Length: 204
Image 1 (cartoon, helix red, strand yellow):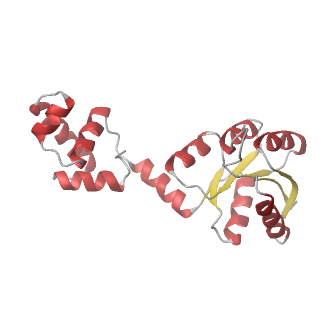
Image 2: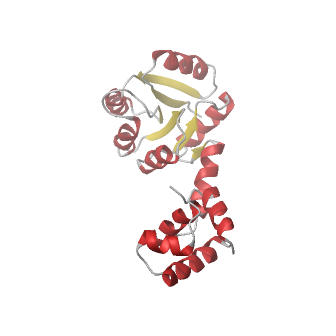
């Protein structure tokens, strides 16, 4: 089986040097190029046609990792994000741009090697914390904007009357929406609704 051809993209030369040394010891992996910016990564990916691009998200001025990922992935080259950032927004933007996987730099080398091989085969490769967030988001119930508004007010500890005043709706309407929220979250108390909403990241 031929080695997986890798292009590194990170704006820190020291990080690239460390990855070069690490990947150089990995069986079945060959680094064919390194880029220090998003623009450079896009150009080199088009020229070298690597199997996988290891992409950092924060790349200094110019194209960020997400936009570089979008351009590279559109040319049918796999992109595996390797970064220190794991916020919901970062993960969502990267995956939405076409990244095959999302790995954190804190992972063990064996995890990185396995993720590279998985990405080369088109299989999703996610760090455990990222995978848990993705699973939580996927299982989150679909709440309407109004239901989310009311949940937010609940989190502030407001009662039905205060919520009605804050949202310019009737108290009866608040009760109706609360009933739907309870049903969707599988709870029957205000405290339970807030707890589940926080756990599933339904609150801003």
